[in-house]
Image 1 (cartoon, rainbow, N blue to C red):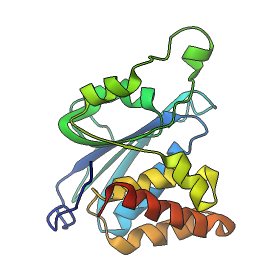
Image 2: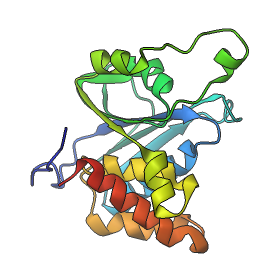
Image 3: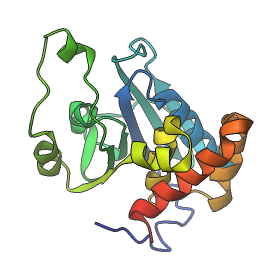
Image 4: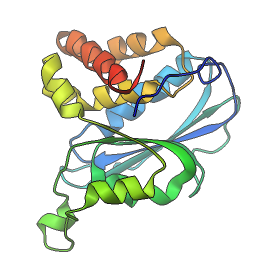
Amino acid sequence: MRYVPSRRSRGRNKMTRNLILCGVGGQGILLASTVISNAALRSGYDVKTNEVHGMAQRGGSVVAQIRFGKAVHSPLIKKGTADYMLALEKIEALRYADYMKPDGIVIVARTEIIPVTVSTGMAKYPENVDDLLRGRFENLYMVDGLAIARESGEPRAANVALIGALSNFLPFEENAWEKVLSETVPTKALQANLKAFQKGKRAIGN
């Protein structure tokens, strides 16, 4: 499925929008939250964030919420109201599916990481997870962020590749992304991250 952004979707609509980011510890969810939040700020939006750090150890579930608009008063996203989801792990996308609007945009990494609950025997990783995702989300885009990151020369940039894919749908200024990445990513890894961002964007963009 390919998405071609319309002029309207890239406009400066200041209606409040809600974004869920989820994954497991070590995938860079909190960095992704920082990049997206700052891109929204640079594009003139009021931004509120809510990040869960308590389970940020490797293998533990991590979730961040971002709300942006003309005037945002609360960082909390209610179930059924999220416009976007960026999931760096498939099971985590299903875990937070109830937060999405029926027509919300969902970007999911093709990565499968065994979470703590599975490795400790508390749960099983479903064999049909891709089918579950397709059945749950109307507007689902699956992106191989890890492959893109490796092609770009920085395996740790999988989160940035997924941000690039999501950027097709966010009404932010085009130059905001590069500026924010240059302020956030270490200098020695910047060019690889910028490449990963653009490759991720083209993975589902025009």
